[in-house]
Length: 94
Image (cartoon, rainbow, N blue to C red; front, side, top):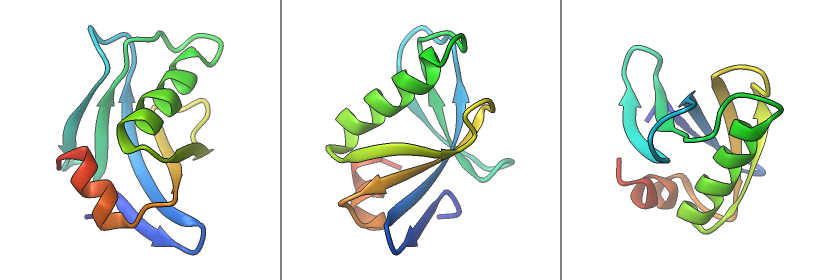
């Protein structure tokens, strides 16, 4: 599980975002990047895709999610609070 790391504040979730998709979805693990691929319907303009990523994953996981690094990149590191790495993996279905 290279895309999940337990840290003292919660779980670090490493993702690769594909904006302007038909719908929001968790695609699975991108083996080449070692990140979880997430499709987001919002365009990468004025932070819309970032807001949608946080909203989508917060709802899916039922936990607080925030962007730690990668505000302007497709590769983002997210902090998930209140869940273990195993719980995150189970809720993501990967």
